[in-house]
Length: 134
Figure 1 (cartoon, rainbow, N blue to C red):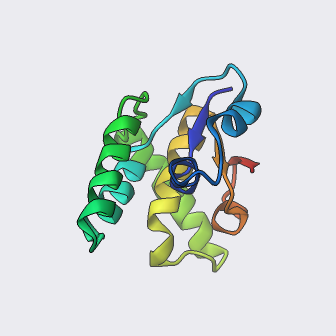
Figure 2 (figure 1 turned 135 degrees about the vertical axis):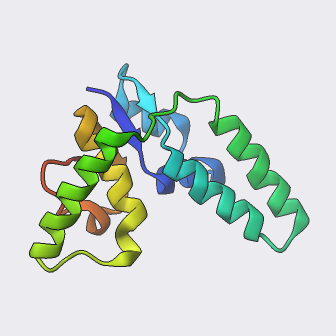
């Protein structure tokens, strides 16, 4: 089983709250992927940094992360997203603030990968998602 890593995990590694070894202890020898959603979220955070030094450190971290294999979003991901969004809507738990999380979950479900996160509440009700918590 491969892993798609949630944005919060990459941030924790870059901030030193988690070490690469902590992530490797959970993922083992399995493939680890980066999502375009994570690239967007990290770019957004870098661009909004008021302090130029912080902005540049975040940009450097993003460039470093972009060396990881990228799991693309394609039409099939869109179909999975639509099914999951409809299921969450019918269950009364879909909200616009969850869109990025749902794209990540859709990618993981589409490929049969586990999603590694520390944010259980963001993903716990998504059907078919293999959630691995730090």
